[in-house]
Structures are given as structure tokens and as C-alpha cells.
View 1 (cartoon, helix red, strand yellow):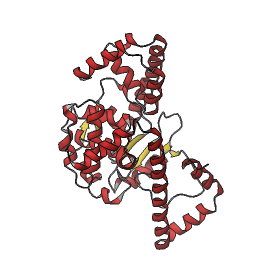
View 2: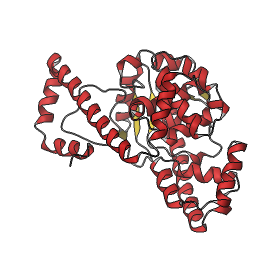
View 3: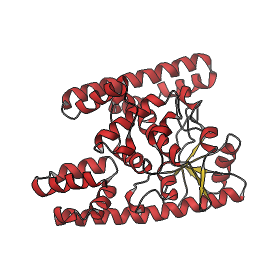
View 4: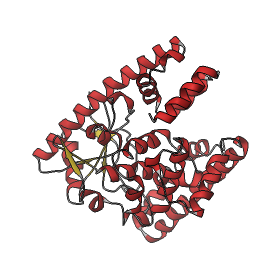
Length: 349
């Protein structure tokens, strides 16, 4: 925790009535509840919290620590198994960060799946090999979308703590995959105790990309605090501005996220960004959303509908051009359950 932030936070804790229910709601929604506890504990601020809340935070953090230990072991086992069969994985995202040791405590990071990426040659080998080893689809459907997109369907093995995602790409959008892909991240990847992970610069880039591009944060002008916290920690290990500037088309959305992080973390030097009219405009909308809740909700609903329609138009185009898409689309439009699910997702039912 930055010293200036530490002083300001302690002042607020001492003099202000904190809505701890709201704090718990936001931190759990953003998967940073254990990170919040660990940082408050390191700063010796738990004394300002209700004892009941401290006990609850300790319990959740203990559970997360145990889960992460199992995830780390599962990842190491997978790494050994794949390397023994001449298949080299590069671990990504939360698991990659745990393996790289970027956290003071492994209990800080909440992790879902184990993500790793493979070369074009190793990708099909990894899928076939891990299926033979006992991994199978988490969700089984009658039909599947023709594109594997950035990763294969989630796989899980009985008695394993985490599902796995086998990546062939890091983004869904093709105009970006040309500059941020396996070849780009592989050349400066690092090996930590026999496990290959991204360089710190590309860890930082991917943490932003996961929010801004893959989860459409650049459209919504929103921030996932889990990604922001990872970016903050990684900015202490690499120059954030230089890392982002290694990219071309992705540079603008990444700098906008850095700008938001700079604001949220109270002007931390390591999160400096390129100040432009575009980043200023982005910040204006980002900051306004904290006070204009109703306007923001309406705006986000419009964006959700826009993105849904944009995706569907693209599918229609592919269905005209390619037979496998036509077959998939016919099965989808005759599936009544799919319509119900999408109406719920769009908030129209």
C-alpha cells in the first residue's frame, strides 16, 4: 500500500462511518475480498473493522488460500505432464500470476480456471492429450459454435480443483490478434521454477486486455477491480507506460484503463499513462458513472443490446459465407431455450 494512501485511508477509518455492507458487496462482486483483507491486515487496519467482519474475512481468505494451493499444485502437475510429452504450456492470467509470485500472499488472488496458451502446433496436441488424460467438457451441448475462438471449451477432471482453458489466442477480435498473440508473448516469456509464464510487461497488458477488450470494458467505461489490482502490482515490476506503448492498435484502450487505474489508486507514479484528449474523454465518462447511476444503467443497457446485435450480424454474415455456420445457426434458431436465456441476459425478461 502506498504511504500517502495508507495515511488517507487510516484517517477515513478513524473519522468516518464506513458502510461495510457496501464494501463487502463491491469487493466480493469484483473478486478482491481476500485482497482487501490482506492489505488491511498488512497495514494494521483490522482494528478499525467490526470483529464479526474480520472473522468472516479471515474465513473466506483461508478458504481461498487452500484453493490456491491446490490450483498451484494442479498447474505444476499439468506443466510436468505436458512437458514430458513435448508440449509446452505458457500459463496465463490468475494462475500465471500465482506461479510468478507477484502477490505477497497467495491468498490475495481469487482464481477461477487454469488458463494456458500453446503454439499453433501444440494446441491440438494439448487438447487431445488432456482429454486422454481424463479431462472432459464441463458443459456438454448438442451443438457447438464453429469457431474455437480464443480457447477451447472448458475442461475439468474428476477430483481436480479447477477447470482448464486451453488457449490458441488471447483475444477474440481479429484486428487485435495480429499484434498480441502467441508469437508476441512467447519471445520474452519467463520461466519460474520450471513453469513458463508471461513477461511482467505482457502480464500487465493481458490483465488490461481481459477487461477492456474481452469483457468490453472499453465500451462500458468500467473497471474490474481484480484486473486493476493486478495491474497495480505489475506496475511495480515493469514500466506500465512502456509496456502499453509496445502495442499499436491496442495502445489507446490500454492507456484508458491505465488512466482509470491512476485515478482509482490516487495518482500512483507507476501507473502513469499517455495523457491525450481520448484518455481525458474516457476518464470523464468513467468518473461520471459513479454519480449518475440511472443514466449509467440506461447507457449500459444500450451498449449490451448493441454488442448483442453486432455479434449476431457477424454470425449472419458468416452463415452466408460458410456452410458450418449455416448448420450451427439453423440448430440455434430452432432451440427455444436459447431465446429465453438471451432475453434474460439482455434484461428484457
